[in-house]
Image (cartoon, rainbow, N blue to C red; front, side, top):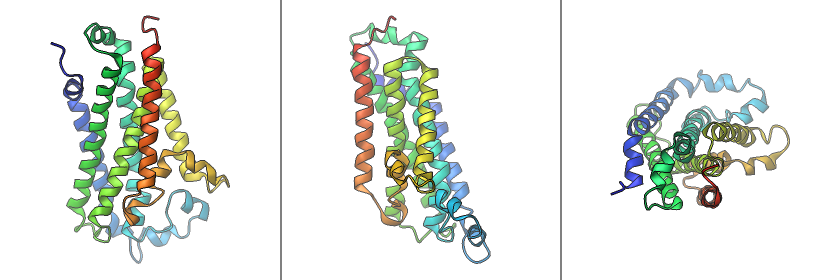
Amino acid sequence: MLPDIYTQTLTDNRRTLLGWSIGTAVVGVLYAAFYPQVGGDGGMADTVQNYPEAMREALRLDDMGSAAGYLGSTVFGLLIPLLVMGFGVTFGARGLAGDEESGYLDLLLAHPLSRTRLAVQRFAGLVTGAVAIAGLVFLGMLAIRSGAELESIGIAEFAAQCVHLALLGTTFGALAMGLGAALGKRGQVLGIAVGIGVLTYAAGNLAGVIGADWLKYLSPFHYYIGGEPLRNGMQWGHAALLFAATIVLIAIGLFRFERRDLRS
């Protein structure tokens, strides 16, 4: 009997998933805990006002004195999303391209298993990992919310930001897995996906600075944090666009995967 691919994916990658989840949550908690030293009079928030306006705008530093402003510029604006992007890209690249390069894909497809079913279950494992990371980040923020003076951000707002975080991870995971399904070369997939991630991050943050505001609408990072979920709660339109991008990216990859000669 062929084991369930989804369960096998989680089992085979349990240490990787655990490392990404705990590591990302710990990074987020450690930096969030610095807020009492940053906000308020005499803190870093006052120093930031002396920075050039373009830098403050690009790095979201205009409101470092508030909890939402601090977390939105550092924890959820820089560190956590880049880590989650890294998870999505590496896990997605490994999902199909890694199997193909190692020869394991031939063994799997020798069983009565369609390519689409294999890819969908691999991707379901990636989604589970992204949700687990976002869930641990959420629990970490709640654990330090009082001690780190973050009560001005509601539980619903933290939850909304973490939902957007999970969607960001699945979007980049879909990009990498779609590329892996189409190309079959893990190294190429990693290079292309990371390059796209860096470019879209820059576009989401620097578009206004360079006078090309329209560029941010091409960036998943804009839909992840542009609506400021830490202040405004769930941004359903932005979340829907991230979800739609995920579906389109994985569907295009599957279309190519079903038709590609895997022996070449």
